[in-house]
Amino acid sequence: MSNTTKYPFYIKLAFTLISILSISYIICIGKDVLIPVLMAFMFAVLLLPASDFFSKKLHFPHVLSVAVTVLLFVLLIVALLTFLSYEISDIANDYDRIKKNIDLFITDIQGYIRTTFDLSLWEQKQYLQNVKQDSMKGGGKVLGTTLISLTDVLADLTLIPIYTFLILLYKTHFILFFAKLVDKKHHAKLKEILSQVKVAINNYIVGLIIETIVVAVLTALGLYILGVKYFIFLGIVTGILNLIPYIGILIAGIITVLSSLTATPDISIMLGIVVINIIVQIIDNNILVPMIINTKVEINAFVSIIGIIIGGGIAGISGMFLAIPLLAILKIIFDRIESLEPWGYLMGDNMPKTFVWRYADPSARTRPSIIFYDDDTIDNKDEEQPPITPIE
Image 1 (cartoon, rainbow, N blue to C red):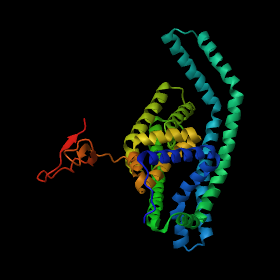
Image 2 (image 1 turned 90 degrees about the horizontal axis):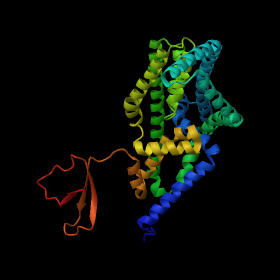
Image 3 (image 1 turned 60 degrees about the vertical axis):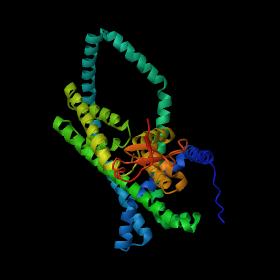
Image 4 (image 1 turned 90 degrees about the vertical axis):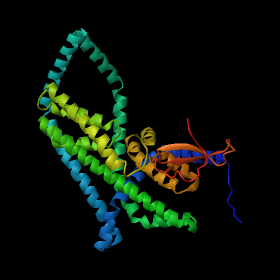
């Protein structure tokens, strides 16, 4: 006798929505702990092949293979940060020249505003003074918030490598936990889910790395053609900031424009930088993202945008970065659980080309069944088909 209880659709829908809201609430109130753990989980999945290489190919002890893998990863990040810090110090040495060029640029802008909008220099300075006073009033609060944020970032940078090491070290322990949590008859499905999650996250992060490198190279090449100083540094910064959805490329553009003032206040150079950023973004959004990213995670754009906005609201930039891989994990789970399969379909991007209502009983028009088709599906015209009514 089966002990499975079948609930009506509205009860299952309520349970699903309550579960999603509960998980979101838990992430929201525990984000300070969970976000570093989730970031470490993603890095652990990325580093898993390297750990397996040291363990299985070079026959390192398990603890040593994990330690070497994480250490090499940390050294790579430190090397990148060291290079960026040296470049930043070089830009800081040009502070006087940047300040002079900014003053010349502001003078040109003020002259343009005076000619175009008939605003005197005194009126412009008065407006800037008012803005400066308003900014100073909230300066203390902003400074305090910034210091707290920097402290949190430094704490996360310390914890993430530790978490990554522990996740890789206790990988088998966690898998056994999931195996004990799930009934043995579902172990095959559990193994498939874990395998697909690993592949999806690994491919997604590798895709992001490739996208970052391509954006950095294209930006650096464009800036080199324009004759912008520090073009390599600015290309790398643009590639890294491009990982932040929506606002990253804007921040990179502002940094690039300010850095260009080390050489000249020529407005044509600044316009050239803006044009290069726009061209790189067009290439990124229309070629790189569909070819590299969207093929790795089958999440449609509508769900992606909503997920990124919610992730940003919950955990800021880290939440925006984690939104897509978490959605990919949810889709993998939903696709393999029968009661949640419609939600997995909703998140996917494989839309049918044709949508019709097919009636199971031609005489019973009040009880239709829904059939989804591709254009090539209905190709046997000789076979008798029940009446099909296209949706209006």
